[in-house]
Length: 100
Figure 1 (cartoon, rainbow, N blue to C red):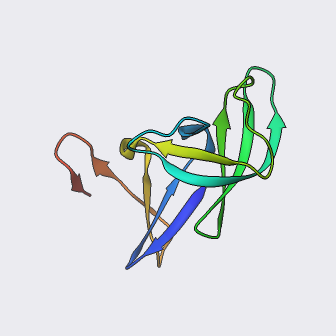
Figure 2: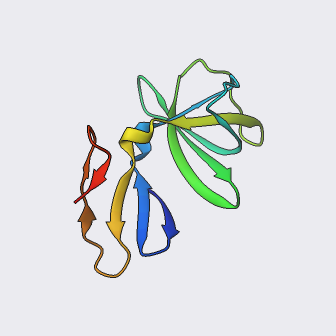
Figure 3: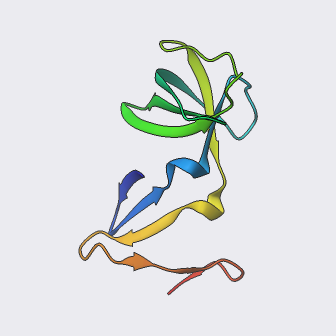
């Protein structure tokens, strides 16, 4: 899970909720591909983003190569929040945008 420490809490996202592809889109960020691991119907793709190692999913026939560039994106509603002190999940009411 990608984790990014912030003041008082940690944000994370599961690898299966991260998409890596060769196509640049408005919401995607550029990353460097470090490893491609075939997993049957899809590939696990390890990338480097701002000196952080991240793993996401990619299409088998995407044409991505280790050492090349790619683009990573994920949906904000898949972000998980945790209290940085206790490690406990902070649940968000997705409809209202409130944290509980």
